[in-house]
Length: 267
Image (tube, rainbow, N blue to C red):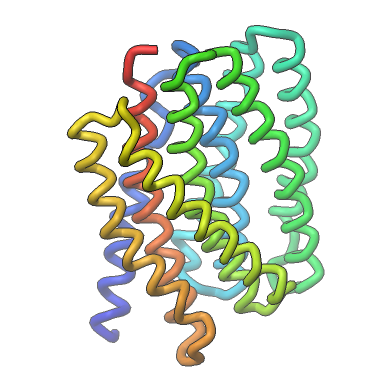
């Protein structure tokens, strides 16, 4: 096996291992910062499961992708129950009731045959509805907090989602499914990610540990961004898909740590 492939597999295994306990620190929501963190993680999971499904469609990193999809579905459903139960207002509870319905449709799309292009298009439509409601729930929890740190937890958590969204659309474009729209979404998400990273780094609440973790995220971003840029360069599609997949997982690990650090700050 090519050395680069071996390194890719090792990195993917490490990322998957690091993310296995994602969200398992507490069985229930502990406070509003934790609620914002978990609500924001739902956004990320809506994109991560789609990325994993598309990796299966490419037949790239299939064992890891299937594991990621299964773990992400389980985590999404557990957090959905927690967030609905913790909801401090009928409005927020209603959002999570709607999210339950949208998630059921998304989960059905995830069970569809990965070999059919039409199923990929349906998946992208289903996850858009889940993402919109998950984002609404996050902003509602942020508003309930009413503290500046709540906004930072939301922004940091959204970086996790953007890492998965860019990778998802990359894999969609390489099938190809809605390639032009996917390319435009990648460019939009990239600009948002870069701007938000600067905001998080320069926030008055950023501790030295947070800034150190953001530096680590910067190094992961360099690899991920370089992999994204190779979309137009031709070459070995399976290798390119695998590199984007792995780089997005590694970036996710770093941004999840940053989000957790912001969530741990005093509200």
